View 1 (cartoon, rainbow over the protein chains, first blue to last red):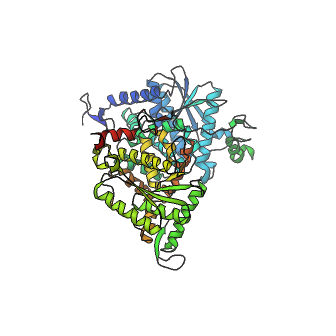
View 2 (view 1 turned 135 degrees about the vertical axis):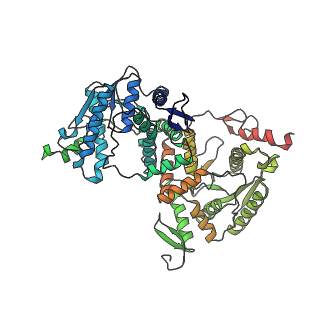
View 3 (view 1 turned 90 degrees about the vertical axis):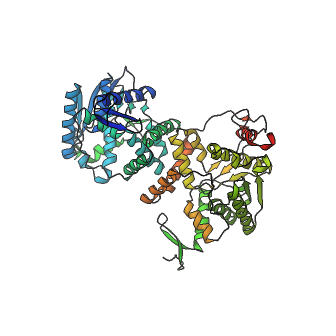
Length: 290
Length: 290
């Protein structure tokens, strides 16, 4: 198959009805991201953006696209201390920062006296989420960033949506908006890739030969729902992207959970409880407390 | 397999982890319906209920259960004039009324000068929905019924939900509540089978040998989403019922569409427009207008 410019194709999409080469695809991809950002008001050109990168394909693609679109960005990586996976991830983001000529900020979880590998396996994914959200928010606010960008894909958002409907945690659905404004000590959050698929992100980083690690987190569970989403997409082309747009519309019309803003008695950050979940984790796992 | 009472089993469910015979299953089924009604406040014992029956398995099961639970009910059937399907349906509901010793009310669409078969095929399902909702609401109100009960199953609700998220019509999701209170000229609506599956309904009517027609409406499209839902259920037992409970919770937290109540200039019923959709259909298809 050939690209519309006549060169050999690397990307074919039945959803967009388009076939593109390795030169045309990155422009097409960046333009899709630009369109999402504009249509959904995800980022403003005046904002200083903290771009969270894990070293994987999705956040690598996000960093490339936001850089191409001339946003004021710095990279941010948390070294979670997950054995070889974290070492490979750090190496990838360091190479990425060099390739894109961007400033990279790294926080090591070890500096808090523990790593994700110290958490018992039943709680590891939940603890990892708490740790990442806490550290990125605090870092962003203390360093004067206006917004935190994460590379959630349309698959991520659909998975989160289905699981939360299934478990009846419907109040979380309002969090699926591509832009959540900040309040109190919480910095605004943005998901500029919410309409992008993992396949599009992978094609971008492979086409441009951007540094990334293909390693999966060893703690990540096998997700039957991800398989199901892919099977539905195979039967109904365009399902994922249409569904995610509906979810995002729904997220706006769901009444957000009403809660009284509290501040953690230990660290002073925003919390639902007297002591925030992050401080509880530190209290439990940090070697400094032993 | 044997029932817990020792008799031969007719029903096995991995979701409820139960195996039941033809005597124990109907009691189990009726109790499930009772539980839904109580937990979700779907019906009140003081209410006069118009039970909409199509002649199919689901509404037949509903009529049986509500009758067993001693609600004050009458049956209601609309003869849509869809060839042999409507003839078989009418025969089934007449037999059902006799079997359950219930009053049956029938409205013939033909009395308005047209039938569903007169509607062009692209618009037939949408027109049929409009016609049924209009006629059942007007009949219920004029005859002093407090609530209209329809036999939507958990599959129906999931299908409606997925399609409306996909098309971005998220304001309709608030209509998925198992009980919608009446206002203005609209009578309250109830879905007492929203947690029941088609399989449970089929088992009930077959077990009790209740009169129903297995015929499908000839206008009903093949629904790929229905297949997908069944495939997901096969992979994740309990998916349908857990998901429908989440949807119903979500339906409550979605801000309902705000609209100014208008009344149709022709018939005086509640409408979004000057002329209601039902009167437009009558205007277009009725032989009385030609």
